[in-house]
Image (cartoon, rainbow, N blue to C red; front, top):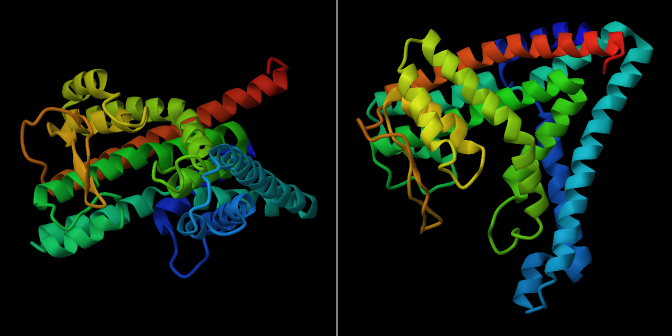
Length: 339
């Protein structure tokens, strides 16, 4: 039952403190290793950097890139799991309290509830103050699309989409994996998520190298994204939003995204708030066609950012309750020998 207490402590540490500035976050370390391994593998394939290979007109080695992508994903994810597992194992041999404290700290580092709200509310504050230029800059830190030509409603929509999507992969999914396997499995998921954000792009350089990371991220998020959507629907009822609309749009539009998982929570948010998300956007000056999510009943407004953050927080608390239940059931199953 120590994991339950560690999860509760880590959850509330995240809500109270968030990501402290000035400290190196473990995800930054994972990102550093990803960059080093990626660059090293590209040099192993071509004898030089990828950019130099293109400039010199070297033949593209797609199969080698694909194989290295699988190797990169395996090394990062498995390596992250065993590093955290080893640290906790060593701490437990020193003293059980140290192991508990470290696991709670690791769980706190894995979760991103407060930081997601804090960063998204920077956009809200700018829009509320009438500073559209500042809001465009703030949202550019959160999304990959071009933001300098977005109007106020489009900036708010991008922020709502970010909160809704990251409710699943920044909060609900990590808690799901922590419940199944403690901080080691939670950090392994964060490694998958970090790989997806760094190398899983369909651009010329990474389309083959990032293939494994992109597909593993889709697999890992399949169940958590749907749990997140269901919890968010319950949250709409608690917050007295449009629950019927949330259910209707979820059933209709939950697959209206290039990713099989991202539209799950976006559909709930769109239906609950009577707004339309998704649609075509510019990325690096080029339009990327995406289906819409929800009905265009009214323009997205900056208050929708605050409302979506309320959905985030209520969903996170519901997931905490569910996680405690999962941990308890797993412990009962293990103790009785049924698992």
